[in-house]
Image (cartoon, rainbow, N blue to C red):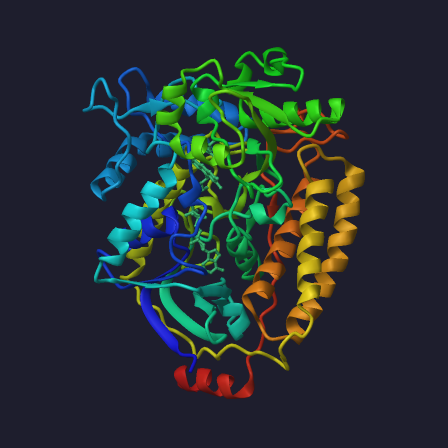
Length: 552
Ligand code: FAD
Ligand code: SIN
């Protein structure tokens, strides 16, 4: 039987943002975490390079702030950047307190080993070898599993948020929780809470080639948009310059830390092309490196470029990058002796659900933190290793704000169970697979690293047709995990296209051959999309119950 579950705090997602929130909120109330696969599966667990913070006496808050602002190409919110950077050392200390084991220097074991990545003027990235995310996820998940106030439900996929206008309630939109699909058995449960956090991560799977795992289907962005929350800056999809190029290596990232330790990008003929592109050469901000590779590939017709580490000591490479070294070896590439073939791939969505500096969205009792959110930290291009930092800081801030809501208890209206309509089991899964493939290929070909009005307009026409097809299929058939994700990637794809068409300039990660320059006439602006919502009148039995509650 599907059932109704109550908690003080409801968390959707068990990556760094969700776990940071849960661990803080659990000090004050009961927390339920829903996660759509096994708990550790997230973008967090695949993070390699590390987490940025001001951790060395040679570094300064000002320097980290300036690097973040430079990468963000005029669109970061300075107050947010300054606040997050100021909290960076404490956030990293907090992780250490929770049991995260970062790598320490061999010569000075009392100090963290700090590495460097693109766009950083200092070594300021704390890491755990080249499996930083795995170590963070391990420690935080262990802490959450051991906490008496936290219930973690795996294989439970949030379908939609429960919001006031869908229950016939007028006025500012308020969130009461969500409906979620229990994968085993296909039952839909109702989860109600005083505060709901979206921590569902990114949307790399909207693109055909991505460094992201399968969970990254933009569910939180799509749910928030349907619930009437504002989403912002979705045109800024960050393409990581170096994903391993191999037909069987599914989305394996070659960390930017390799370039931080001296790696050089070369064309097939050996030319180190970044030297003529940017003064920071291979450590230029990511948008510039990805675009330079894209241009080289288009010009030469080559399939990939190469990351050359062969001038560095083999023993150093094996020790510093054991996971990358071993994985490359499995695919027949010995990075100590031969350059690694690499291509760009969709990596990180800088835009997302628009939030305040405390992680609040414009829907009451709904918060967002981590990659799903747009907080103003990244602007038009995220600085490497600032996203783990953002997830930790905003996870905690959103928890603090949610705790303050406990003082005013929620008056839950009567909430109907999930309405499956006239649904029957789909008989042709091939339709779903075909739609998935089509959306992702369309986005890669028409809404990729370099864009044009013509390609974007074509993409818009095509996605509108696909949306209609998917909508029909979705409402005609029983809800399944695949259908939830398909519907969400189509929504997010459409929102990305819409946002890209709205931006009449090139800035940061959005580059259009039709508007190649910054728009210097006006102050840089965010693109913002918000759905017009209609108050939906509930069925008569629910209306009667609501009337009784109001004493009518
Ligand atoms: P995630 O860690 O992605 O967690 C999202 C969670 O939500 C998952 O548990 C997922 O299953 C769940 N979920 C999604 N949809 C639903 C739903 N409908 N219902 C229920 N649960 C749902 N950043 C850095 O700062 N430094 C790095 O070195 C770095 N390296 C990276 C390397 C790779 C290969 C990748 C892919 C990313 C990297 N990033 C890095 C980015 C960073 O890892 C992410 O931005 C960050 O971990 C996001 O954390 P999160 O908690 O917001 O989301
Ligand atoms: C990497 O290790 O190159 C990824 C770092 C990031 O995405 O911040």
